[in-house]
Image (cartoon, rainbow, N blue to C red; front, side):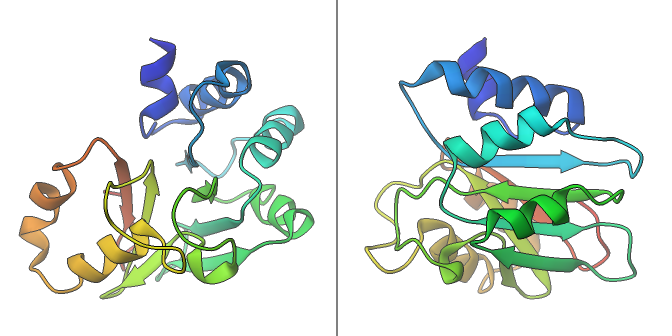
Length: 171
């Protein structure tokens, strides 16, 4: 069950907090962390943020969900990331653990395509290279196909994905 929590995209702050706590004890398999905070009033304790930063040191991205359009920030600076994640706003955030692609802002999630923002938790086999993240390649593919086929394409891998659309809804 811990492995399921570790790999799953969790909608809801409580499950995600459990994920961050257990992640530091698993040591056998590291991957990125997606946090979906659907309500503005929720607070993520500092211990959980510190764990996420330490385990996933390769960049941070966040999309706030309370505007007319998504507001997204990407940074390699975890002091800046902490100020973003402490905001009393609903969001989807991503702490990167690099497996494919250089460690830099251009490989941090989310990846924008067709007005949407793509986050992933895991590695898509045989996609990407030393310079380009596998998730960026997936976003490029999705940008070329109608959205009714996205789920079919994304379900071809064990990697978990989250998409924030142009109306600030999470899929």
